[in-house]
Length: 124
Image 1 (cartoon, rainbow, N blue to C red):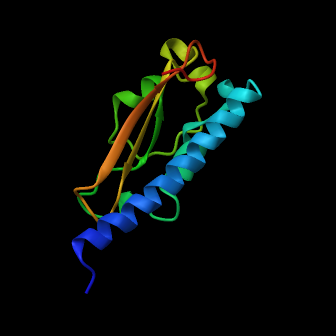
Image 2: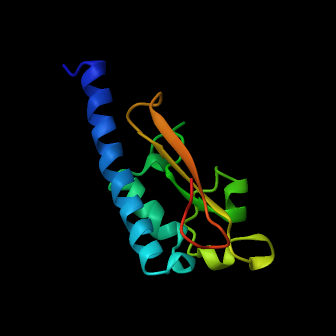
């Protein structure tokens, strides 16, 4: 039998790996000045991994929402929209919201916003 603490540790390890992969892509794009070409679909795929939280009834969705698309976090539709067109009136997005929820542990999740300066590298 798997103890709750073991499930939580396992989930945290998955989260760290997926979150790190996503942020490495953002960092490489920032170094190459390619932030505007990043898409929510690409980043969300890295964060979701093989598990699809949408398949578990009542689960919170895992993914990445860019700019104005972060208005509806219940929208599970993969977005091919890029940073350069996800803002108001298809302008540059000023932020992205990343959210991870373990489909096996409905009580474990993480969300974070990252801000761009007119589609330049993220700043804190």
